[in-house]
Length: 431
Image (cartoon, rainbow, N blue to C red):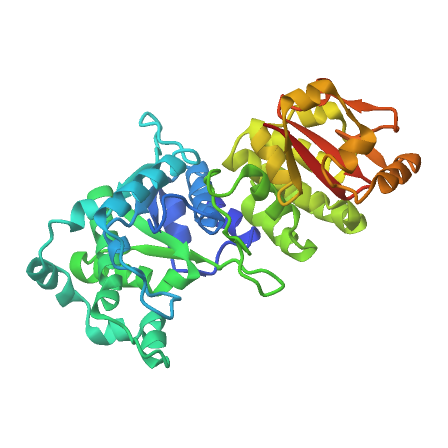
């Protein structure tokens, strides 16, 4: 019989490699398993979200998840999948990053100590910091041969590459340190399973080998595929960089838009990987989406599910209002219901002119507002022509030449949105 956790991950496309008898172990008892998170920043990004979701499924099916933050290994840098050595982080930066990661992880997993399978967040710096080189070489290094370490793809790729830098001893020892993490967790927490991305298979199996040689015990491993995009571009990145889980690094609006702009092919994959919708719900949504692809049903659903999971209901409401303003029918009331930060994210790059409150209080005619006051349009004649064509709006409301802009038009007491046609915008901001 196949364990529900493994079955769940299989149909979602979240298993790449798995050691023999892992199913048997998970079927036999509630098992402790861990995934490592690299503290190179004080926030995780959506690439890390795959691993978080795996831990969430793991806990959902009665197992005990450990999120291990690599405070020690983060000071070295994992060579897996890298062509050059990474810059080393200092302890102060690492401590800041670790606090940020712990706070984020607590949002996704149940850490209530009263739960039978409560999650834990651990930091490998806690057990590596006092380990001397002599002790580590004697207790750990003697159990893994250089031949074994050299056989790993992450090592072979770097050594055989054309990179002038080669591979430092610091990076070479990374797999031993990660292997020791597994050994330590096995001994102290009865942790029998390590999970991670497919690029971690070599490091993970070194841990299994260390447990076998030092303790004469059996450990297990499972990896998931690395997420790719159909167009060949890197998943989780935009021209501005990573899509972060921290709203101060990637706003909820930009986070939502990332998923909304996914291709149809990618989204059919993402809906399985990144949401907790049931198999039947997903099959139904995919069918509906294929019949009416122009409605972007899958994109909207995954954007909703993930914004709600990573941020909040309020953030989701804000970004949905924002999308309605930019792409659909909306009103002055809709504009007033989103916060100022979201408003300016929607209209990022739109021309803006600051005007005094006194001038607004005195009233501004439509001709003046669209020409001499803002230079939105080139002349009074162009402004008048646009008004006669009924293509001018103030705060998403069509207006005539007789309309006068005043204090009543201020959104959040701060700004006014001018519009010509469907796509030309201008913002008046009160100073």
